Image (tube, rainbow, N blue to C red):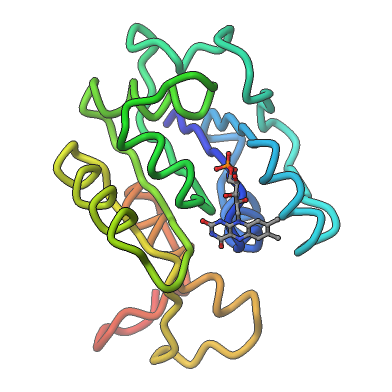
Length: 184
Ligand SMILES: Cc1cc2nc3c(=O)[nH]c(=O)nc-3n(C[C@H](O)[C@H](O)[C@H](O)COP(=O)(O)O)c2cc1C
């Protein structure tokens, strides 16, 4: 599978870290792009992001990457965490950065685009932008952890969101708590 991961400046760098640690980079081609503010949030929340070997990292100001063109066949893009700023710019069709152009391409090609926004409360503009993106084919997975599976550590809580991302990507999530099913 060919996957683009994009990190933007919303709180929740832990979700990106957990997702990176759970993707098999030997089995999948993983590309990673950071917005400028994503780097600041990573610094505030994690200090440092551990990027597994094999992940291809790119800046957010280049169009010299394959996934900004529909001609390159990619399977999925995940924006995690996704700021309301990036969400709004995608909804408006702005595509003047690597992340925004890639999201635009995934939508026009009807490829899987997952956004993991974090903001509270929402204003009407946020809500309208979310509706626009759902109508355009994106999947919105709010960073809303669940607690009914007994998660208690920070990593376990973050994994309740990451498990759902992996489900959307149709990738295995061993150990995920599934309601009324024996655990994997
Ligand atoms: C520490 C920190 C936490 C932030 N948390 C959020 C957040 O949870 N949600 C959000 O939409 N923006 C948040 N922001 C604001 C965004 O980073 C800001 O709107 C920025 O312009 C987003 O740009 P980007 O989407 O290009 O990364 C936060 C900023 C900082 C510095």
